[in-house]
Length: 79
Image (cartoon, helix red, strand yellow):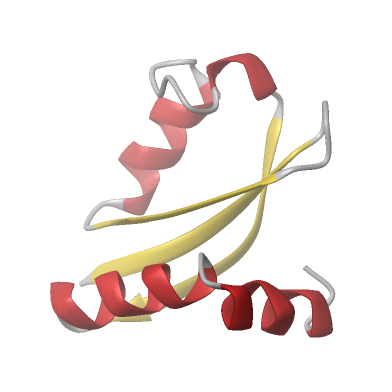
């Protein structure tokens, strides 16, 4: 299984969008400061996740969320 996840920084309110095959491990990496992109934006809150059966679908969904249309959809979702 693969996961697309969205984190929100409680420090600056910004979102981080990523994908992984092991969501528990990846969230731990974010929370402990192992991920450079979010290290200085902690604490982080998981605000959304989606599960996919293959890597290609997860990568496509992550790419969509990072696009203009995807950001607009997240806004409509209240994320």
